[in-house]
Length: 309
Image 1 (cartoon, rainbow, N blue to C red):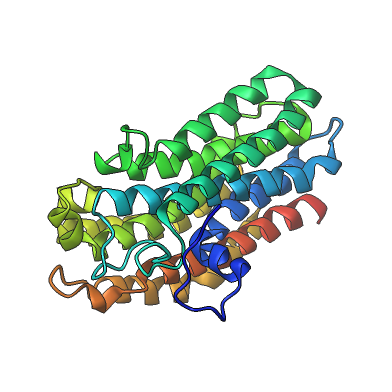
Image 2 (image 1 turned 120 degrees about the vertical axis):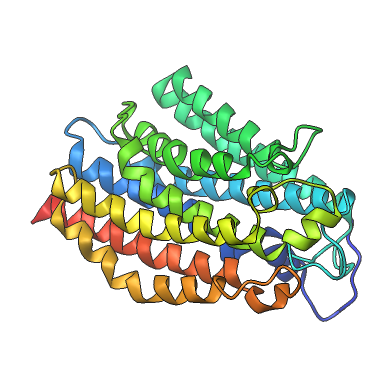
């Protein structure tokens, strides 16, 4: 795997950490944690706890692979340029070659998929179907002439992959049981993950239009996209509240409301968006990812406390 350095003092490790966009990893770690806690609280059969590290590592590797291929294809298709804010900027700044990033993405997917085969060995080929959906969802996000993100389908794909699919996959990987109640459990996490993408796409409306690609933000326009962001954030809190009211979740999950203040701060921040001045919300996606982590940890703690108290 070859690379091009503009700063000889930086290590290979630091370059790949930047390329993988580790700040976004809460989006894959949180649904796995939710799946683990839901298993602990609701499943009464045999649980294969020894598979937990494998599930976590495989999920993060799939996420890293998606980010790397996204960087490669966005660069090749002119979506990411010197003046844009998206991507890790690892290719744009000449820190790693496009070919190295592409091969790195494929390697992440290959290792993650190989680890997933251990789950297939434990539980059978139904798990393989989930793995293949995750693999294709990540690889085709912006790549291989499918690029469903560029056809305004990114929000839906992100919700499925980082919401129901990851939570269901975690529970199935730990138990061999397909608990479809996990769809409801995953809703708030899926909504907040879309919010990360939504903040990114709002900022990049002008650049995506120049690149002639469609995201939900370019299709809906700035005003409607900011409304969508608010809906996603408040929808996450509201869905937890509704599930507590109907008795589906423990009242302890209302701990997520501790994160309401930073969520409102993020809404105010993203609401400042100006199509012609993307600098105003330059780190909207990072801030939303940080809130996603805070909300997700409170959510998992709430599910855990509901199980043991």
